[in-house]
Length: 375
Image 1 (tube, rainbow, N blue to C red):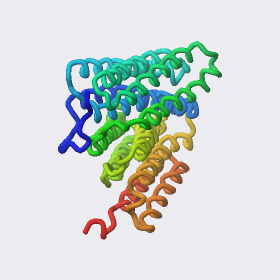
Image 2 (tube, rainbow, N blue to C red):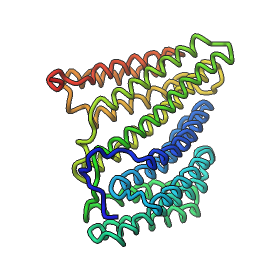
Image 3 (cartoon, rainbow, N blue to C red):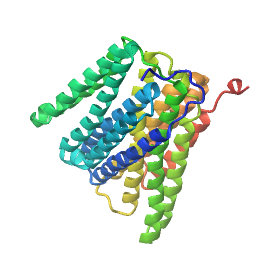
Image 4 (tube, rainbow, N blue to C red):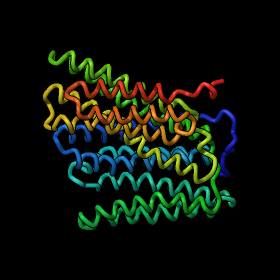
């Protein structure tokens, strides 16, 4: 495992990486569905907090595998088998999402998470054994991950209040490991490959929202009630998803992967972008429930479940990839669109979805490339 060429031409996602992503479809779906149920039942605060905690396990495991693969994907038998172990861990995490979010029981999620991370420890030890150049970096990764996994298990034995605080302490420790490890010798990374992988995960998350929009049509046909409203939600949801896709892919991302610092900023900031995209699908489902009178939450709260994730997604992409490429008028246009989306929270019924779709379209128009950049 000597390290892939960071300038390798034509590097794309491998079939194994695409297969690996499939299990994250399950994990994202389980967490989004549980978020939808809790939001619809009026438990917005607990649902959002639980979702963000569970989503960290999903996102962090995916990101660590992705960055390791761009550097050391040998595609040999041990590498494939260890990847399958990580996939099994993801499925365990997915199965524990409901208990963690609703009952604050992170036992199953911790088990799945530790399985994934210990497989990654083994991969880093392989690097340490076979590649002297990256030995110290690999041992830092392996040692840091191992110590934190022991701490995750110990956390399960703590009283609930202390364990809750401990969760965020350990999140900070996990995030600090790459910063510490890469400070010795930076591992090779392929910018085009990394950004393609992030784009593919974005498509997975937006696919969940497409499914939510399709559910609106199914509801309309099965129930035979509120048909115009549900069809409008479906159409508006598709417009929002298409707009989010358009904005995300409106710029090339690979130039953000240059130094260790810029790579970490790019990778870490996607937590908010990805989490918002996953929560968007839950928001669509909540609006459907409100329209069919199957939700116990207030209309204002229901609106926020849709508008806030969309606004965060657009703001995140704007700040990360678009802001510096736009003229002042374009930046103002994007920010005005975000304000309009957030203001839609206060609109009644189906109008919140229509207004959010309109705001997303405005953001798309405002984020177009300047004429000088196209010439």
